Amino acid sequence: MNTLDLENVSKTIKDSEVLKDISLHFESGNIYGFIGRNGSGKTMLFRTVTGLIRPTSGTVSYNGKVLGSELDIIPRLGLVIENVGLYPEFTGLQNLKMLAKINSLIGESEIREAIERVGLDPKDKRPVRKYSLGMRQRIVLAQAIMEHPDVLVLDEPTNALDEDGVEQIRQLILEEKQRGALVLIASHNREDISCLCDKIYSMRSGVCREITEEQQ
Image (cartoon, rainbow, N blue to C red):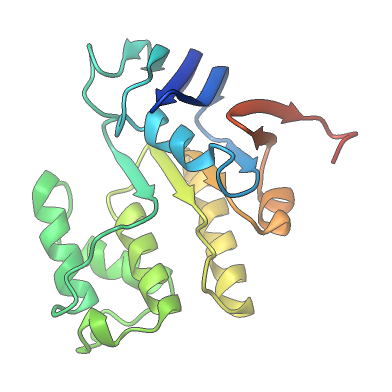
């Protein structure tokens, strides 16, 4: 079992405390949901959890090893977060093949499978610049799942998707949980959170609190 722990994590940027003394424990095979308005700290929390930024105080640990000292970043991490870069002149398949070369964990068959799982055609010859917003969201999700990550962090995963797309991605997220992944998800779509998550947290002004079943 993989575990991810935050202990008294705070983050200050330009004299503003954007994360305030957050302590959380996550385990594999579960989906943890985060709700809150824009600017509440959700994305900053995800950047801190994944090691993209360092907390001002406190620690983030993965399987007991502290990010920033014992680990640079979570190994086998799948990530959908704002401003994911794609090469607009290349196809979705070409983009993912280039990304896969970084870790060299998978081959083209796994990449094609991931593209199909998010509802796209790996044979599509259109460059990404000709993709709709929904198609771009799907290809970004494909890059997050293609290496079968142990930890999957999804910031607004159903953004720009139509109703059928939302349902397809929800099913994909549940499949990743069943596979044993530890999943963190932030969404403005409360239904995403209520139907997918084992535990739900509310973010407000950098403060994180668990929402009980009674409060839901």
